[in-house]
Length: 332
Ligand code: NAD
Ligand code: TDX
Image 1 (tube, rainbow, N blue to C red):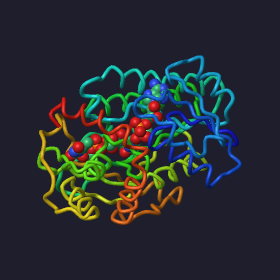
Image 2: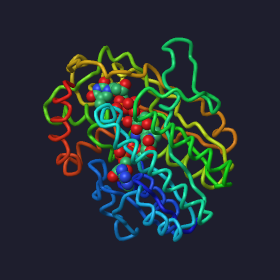
Image 3: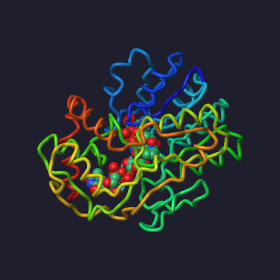
Image 4: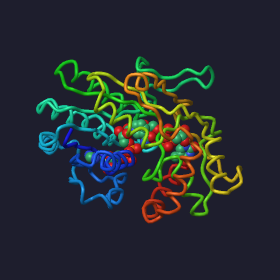
């Protein structure tokens, strides 16, 4: 894996992935392919820009993807439209990038016989009941609720079919909610943190009873690297820290870290089709590849993340007003 092609490398998880590879495997060459949509930010790689090749381009562009894949040894495919709320208003963009974009990557890795890791989400499995402690496993059936998760599920099915029909060497991971630096301010934690830093009240959807499993972005990326190095072609791996929090409780913790009273937030109308609970059974990747979260303590990880947003308003400030205008238009 001397030369990695990282699609979506200017996004939240992709940029952290690039940084992690540069820090832990300094000999690796990296090409980032990113369309620099509203979610892509070149500044997330600003201080390491001289150590990578950055190609601004669309993952749906078959010719471009074919050339870049041919030049690399392996591909890590992060590029996607990633926000559920946006998918409710503009599903077409999600179909194009998430489905057609994955098709374009698959055709290129098929032609050049390159190793592919496809980054997916636990949202493809739909919602778990609030009670009973059930978890998604590698055998759970797809039951997506949103246009976002339906297009991710479609892309996963394409990957599986290309493995079986064409012998493409691909693996898939499904991770739960990530947190950490460089996450777009549209997402739950950065939105609430930056609201408080800007003197606005956080916004909780509905009663805040929805439960998410929070995994530090570096732990997710460690899992991706382990799968690339030792994962079995054709297999899928679920990744999750085990840290389950209701949105209400996580918001209370965030407010505490920020020194604000626990009730200093507004509730807003709930998200349509809002999945109640996600949780991954990650015993397979722990057992087979030795993955362990290095940031199991959400409180410590969240405090470090809050600190990062405090120190890096230059990074998130320019996105904030436009994001909140979009939320205001949707009544949230
Ligand atoms: P993000 O929205 O922060 O970043 C996505 C990146 O993809 C951006 O840099 C954007 O410019 C780029 N992109 C979008 N459309 C493109 C196109 N047509 N061509 C090329 N580049 C394009 O997303 P993220 O949170 O970093 O998520 C990365 C991947 O991980 C996604 O596939 C997502 O489904 C998956 N995932 C995310 C989470 C999470 O909690 N954020 C959890 C599990 C899985
Ligand atoms: O302002 C908010 N208030 C609120 O209560 C926002 C933005 C969200 N929420 C709720 C909705 C969810 O229950 O917080 C929870 C987390 O919301 P998001 O950050 O939008 O994440 P989610 O919908 O759970 O999806 C995330 O995890 C899985 C990522 O965005 C996906 O890309 C990933 O696949």
